[in-house]
Image (cartoon, rainbow, N blue to C red; front, top):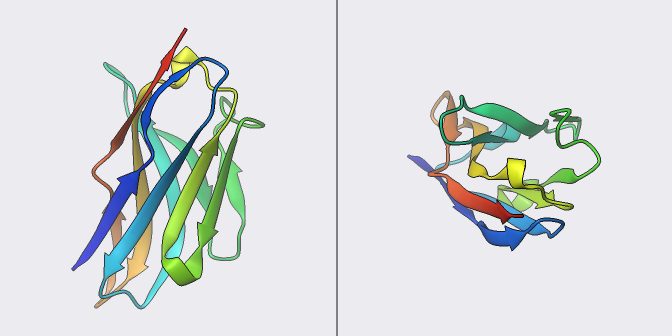
Amino acid sequence: QVQLVESGGGLVQAGGSLRLSCAASGSIVSINNMGWYRQAPGKQRELVATSTRADSTNYADSVKGRFTISRDNAANTVYLQMNSLKPEDTAVYYCTMGVWSRGFSEYWGQGTQVTVSS
């Protein structure tokens, strides 16, 4: 069984910064893709950023230049550094990982709330 545990959300003023972390634990052989999604109230879940094992990254246009995804493969952890936060970044943020365990499965974290006040 694999579990993802997120941390780092909270309340911040517009223009501020937050760093989210997501650590995987359990019977892990290796992790391919890692990523972050978010879901605002009344909206669909949307991609924020992804990272491949080869360190190729992809960002939503709305966060390019403000957010940075990074990973520590040895620690099975992915990070999301969020700078210049805007009220429209307010959402529940979810991490996801493609994990080789007994087979290959996509796992999700429980979500962490990020609230940006104006």
